[in-house]
View 1 (cartoon, rainbow, N blue to C red):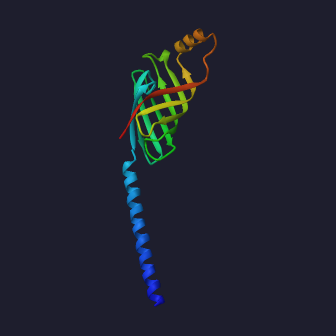
View 2: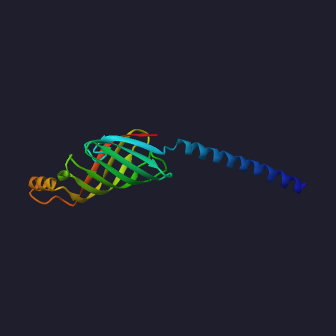
View 3: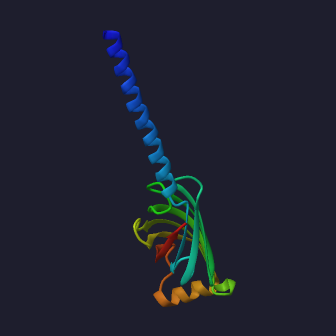
Length: 166
């Protein structure tokens, strides 16, 4: 009698936990389908210009490669998402190259920034620090005249826009 009870109890528990494991696996698969693995961003000061666009592709759930362009420049970045998926905010390390049609006006920048994405909407904003790798001679002269001092090597970088997860 005790053996029957033990066997029946074991059988019931194995079906209960086995069913739960299958259900949990289905939930994980469903959540994975809901994760966005890429995003397109358009907005002000994106893509190394006044108005630009950027595309990000996640190589896994948290690491994304980003490339952007505008009429006056381009940028590339490596992003680490704080949560899985392209809808989440991230830390970004990138390179930005902007110019106004002539090398005398170019600016090259390394930047480290925080990219905020509203997970339930389309709003995105970036804030961080940029380190100047070099400026064109004319841009350097204009900035020196405007501020009566040499332009800073480290400065604030920011952008605002809308993103569309894919």
